Image 1 (cartoon, rainbow, N blue to C red):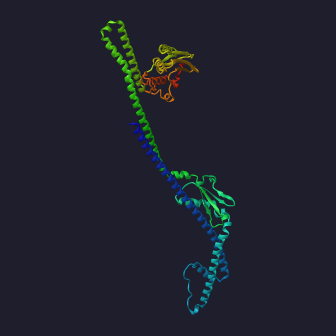
Image 2: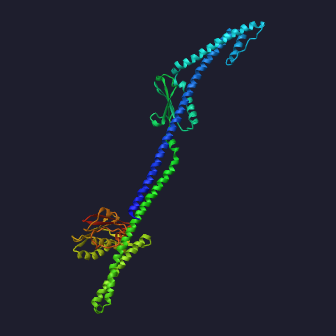
Length: 498
């Protein structure tokens, strides 16, 4: 698949997932806003009902007072009238709400009763007018005197709490609340223990108690809901699974894209490796083939010198071929975890000195030299001798391989102790160096630093990957410092054997 196609699919899928996430967020915001509006409407309706109930209680209070007054008046009136008229008035008072009144009997003997009935009607008319006056007095008392009563008498905290709980539960809102009553003159008159006047203003709702009072005397009931936010979001928790699934889908998508690009990179590396391996094997095979053809020449067979030369060429190229094959096989074994290493205590100085002796000749061949500085007092490490030798061999080989054409190669290798527990080995050169982006990848398998127009640098890109793997198995660390066109330094740290 082309990289442009992968990028196109990535953009389309990313846009789709982001659009889906945006729609979900907008829907959740609308749900939260709607739930808040419903919550506010329910609370306001409940507070209005509480205020109305308190007004009815106050009207009932004044009516009870005036009814007591009316009963006392009726009792005093009964003392002044004859007993039979009082009984008649009492009976007729009970039947005051009926549409018809008892009619006097017609007859010559009932004249006295007729007069008595007229007198009773006059008394009832007077009582009616008195009751009407009492009702007017109740209304005037509510208008003129009610606002002067203390608010703790008109709306005590226990009654307000009962009404609040009844109205909120009746409207389906069973949430914790705290409330307070505020007066224009006194401020907060009373409040519950958990009421917070400085709390979230969005969770505080207020309603005027007794709205017919003068504006300067109006008391306000304020209710605070400490768990309003959690209540609102709990009602939309069904949205959580959709967000979880969306994020899982996004994670899988990102992971898939990363894997696709990684596989594409590995495919390109594999192709490069095959090409490099083909060229790497082609040279020794061609040389061996040519040497074999020379052996068929009778003149070569008759010359011991030529025979020795041809046999040496075949031996060298066979070793070179076997070394390359062995390197590939070793990396394969390490990747599968089936390679074996034989750790033992060795003197790092002795191994390094042997490798330096070999490479000193190669450096002098190009006009350069190698310097060694063994400053470490303790150089005994627990490593596999063969693989540790190969590590030093690979690093010095790279220093020669990536030399600069205009400067003789200058290599240096030094050791020192870090405290009493570690040995540090530094291998430096004055070669072509590397860019910072290459430093991050040089220990990756099959990765090779581009060398421009130079084609004499061959390999599979396995050398530094092998070095890194070995140092890791030796429980050490390796890092590189480099500057383009100035050289590279590899720093190896190994634990000392104790």
